[in-house]
Amino acid sequence: MHLPKVSVVIPAYNAEQFLPECLHSLFELSFQDYEIVIVNDSSMDNTASILQECQHHEKISLVSFSRHLGEAASMNAAIAVARGHYIARMDADDIALEGRLSLPVEALDDDAELMVVGAQMHLFGHGFNHVSLLPEDDAEIKSALLTGVGHLATSAVMWRRDWFIQQGLAWNTSLPGARDLRFWCDAMLAGAKFRNLSQTLVRHRIHDSHTSRQADTMRRSVGSNRAMLIEALYPTLSERSISHLLPVLEIPQFGAEHLTNLLLLKETEQTLLQMREESTALFGENRAVLRRYIEQCLVHTAERIKTLSARLVHGNTV
Image (cartoon, rainbow, N blue to C red; front, side, top):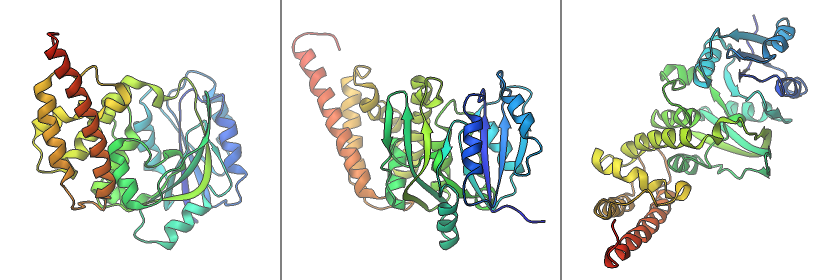
């Protein structure tokens, strides 16, 4: 029996509005050596009816949950039944562009050491209308994982199924968000090599219900991922230093008003200075990129220290 080269996995929750367009875009690709595994995560709209119409399609396999379990559980269930050599993730509201499957397959076939290959995507909707400029180089992608942005566009990614299974890597069901980021972080720490293609292979729709727009959820999850990465990338740091560092790393996204302890900020400043001196790559990351990131964090920290010190001078409570 012929096994498909690629398994396209699609978690679907209340996806009736956009799922047909997503599937049509896949059917229209010139590359056809694939299957589609769709997980209906106990949708409350007409997603089940749409999938009922697809159940006899030769390329589609369906998994249905009797209760809502979330994205990570959906991904793990889809991968468990996938038969393809490679896994390609699509959101139910994404649109595949020509080359979405063929170009990543070529990259993976040509480089046996490459475990994950992504591409650029066109973000549209909810005020967005631009193409990503993600780094193509393995070392820069790995360094970007620490910042939480500008690394891999999950909707445009393909990876080697067997390697991830052999490494025991799965989607983390305990995280409330940023589960794709954790998946890539786990892969990096296990020794994966990454690459982003320069081509734009997916149109990625942004709308109000998009999980990545839930700021509080993302804040907690990105913090958890960062703590894990910092511990791995800077193994000499203590748990105390890491816990005090995390709020400082949030400044670009959430401001500095939540930082009110001057002594802890000065202590964290010393931690950042220590991190800036680390030059040895442990997982293939670009330490020059990380150094620039740390220097930006030092600037933010110094500015906050200056503000709090001025309040003390003027007799204000810190």
